[in-house]
Image 1 (tube, each protein chain N blue to C red):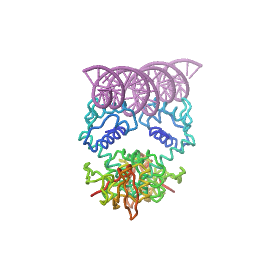
Image 2 (image 1 turned 120 degrees about the horizontal axis):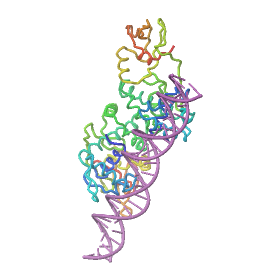
Image 3 (image 1 turned 180 degrees about the vertical axis):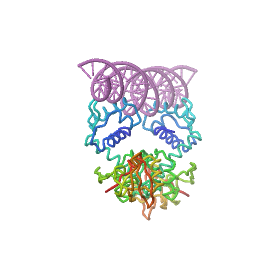
Image 4 (image 1 turned 90 degrees about the vertical axis):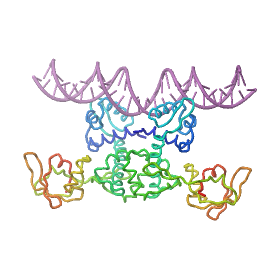
Length: 217
Length: 217
DNA sequence: AATATTTTTTAGACTAATCTAAAATTTTAT
DNA sequence: ATAAAATTTTAGATTAGTCTAAAAAATATT
């Protein structure tokens, strides 16, 4: 059984490595975990002994299959709880992240499978992120981020990367929710902002925001 | 903000003192918390500094109004989650205690009030225990435990004290759920067992069990 | 009332997770 | 290729919660 802290480290490693496709440095991890590099090193040794990561001194970490599976179980819980909070309790999508960070650590396989069933086995959470199944399998669709789309092209918003409430409230204001169609009108080369049409309205979106909007094509 | 451990100690003190009506000894608390007396003493000092209990060396502890209020908030969460697990997710009443022990520590006032609303502001949990309201107010009805009832008398089961799954599964078998009417037929003075009629069937109930069944009169 | 027993507290140590400061190693720049 | 800079690790300390063993205080027994 993993401690709450071990689960959080593993989740961070999984995300930072894009699902295990690259190695993660100590400083990167320290930044993400809001802690010091020395603390990260200590934890890396622990996770390494448990064979959840491959760790080589001075060369960062890579998540193992075992570690990935554990991380995906936590991510599954996080996303199912977020879905519950929005669909059943009436939370808005900018309010759920913090509470789900706590709920994801509740230990009970039975609970999470019952919750999954109660929600009707949802495929994605309120931010459009796919929910891993019981076995930790993740269905990821091909996506492009808005900042890389060409003028004239269009697509349906599939998910939003950052869960910062400030971003999410802003996206609500301009009508940019997963499921909505979006059309790229123009790109300003000066500040790399993008002019788009959402819900029949023209809006300018900054580079910082456009990098966080993913569309299915 | 209280730690998970502090919340658990406070809850145990509240229960052992019958809601604050008597003082609790160090050993009693150690037993309830499955720990050693020395650890209890340490924690008593901490809770005392936070003014959640009155603690005098060698003379046990009394919960303060502040401590009681905190304990009731945790109990409120515990009972609301139990209700959710049974009513919405289809758990049986013997399966919910352990999971609720974890869920009761989730920190979010908004979450628990939304959950309360979602469940339709229930007055009691699946074991018949009253659920404190937002302000920590507890509506307790006058109750008698089955072992103190006289032959010929009857009442409606209002709650079950112990949450041990073995007891609850046994009560399921004999049909003894909160809400069911029960009639006392006879008392065996030899082993203090009681003969009762539930759901039109005669059953012998041991002293140990009858002490855990509470009826409203 | 003195002694034995039980309960409770204190003292000192342990683990998990963290920190700071110093040392080691790698990377970058000259 | 060597020095400078950045990154990472180690060493040693800290905090919360726990433990064991010994000491202190309260309670029970004779």
